[in-house]
Length: 427
Image (cartoon, rainbow, N blue to C red; front, top):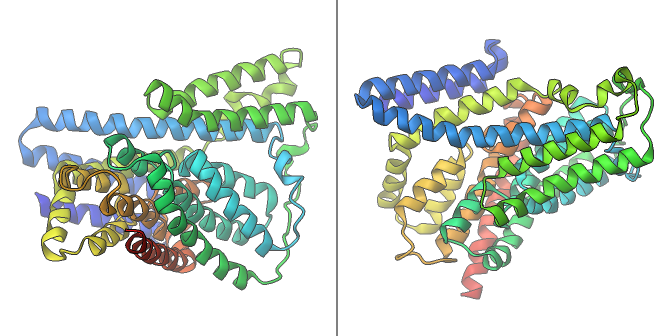
């Protein structure tokens, strides 16, 4: 059974990577892979009740992420419909792509530490559509945004799902993770930024032409500012909501979405139905790329079978016996997270290494937070941020491998080296 599961996962993964040559949508490949994996797992195990319970558990986790993703994307669309991003784009005066790259990189890095890497990627990739006309430029910026978002999310407890898991589990504490991982995370971003800014040289920023959908009357400054700051405020408040209520983030984003919807209806209550139609949340929901959301569901459910069948745990134990060195093991786990979702990898590691042996804020847990958080940038489907960017900009898997993966790998290794040196100097 285990061999069959691994073979099918590899084939599904290959089909996703070869989406364009095969002419098969990656969402279809992900769904077929998930369906086959769960079918074989259920039939081979012979424990239908147990498998159904595990599927329900996986579906609950997947649904939470999907609801969060849908809520965040809808908020971004509502803000965009009100020309809210003009608040930022009108203040961007640089005419050089390299300068814009540095600005976007740092904004994404710090915004990701406050929000999370997924939400930040959605916001920043959407923003690039307002600043850049050439698709090649937008794709390049989307790749850097993925790297910056994952790097920024790794050094705070609320910036990435894996750091949040380690934080809630007691493996890391807030101040320790911020002090220990900030410098490696920053270097993880600086290396790709330095290389790309050199490659871009003096190329100019080409702003987009006004789209046909934007021929409608421009909204007032009050509406633009209100919807922009309310939308951003809701996104920023989600981590606080989670901390105070202990409810999952998707509940906070849906609550905020309801507030944004109500405020929008109140602001436009005196307008004609036709004129306010494009501004409604219902219209925003139709503009969401459901294909990328379906892909997200498929890939998460596919990976879940590897977790429940203990394949990931077996890989972790094999690494422990074969490699032995803790720093190399964690670096390898980070590299594997570029292929397999980092959440089950970290979950497996948390089950394998116990707090009694490795106490809070030890080398293992801090380094795990960095490597698992940033290693996913190496491949486009290695992180939630990458999957979101892939859906929003229709990024080709092999284009990302050719243009971005090398930059992400160099930044990842540079940050890992800095953390090891920094830890040994301090401790």
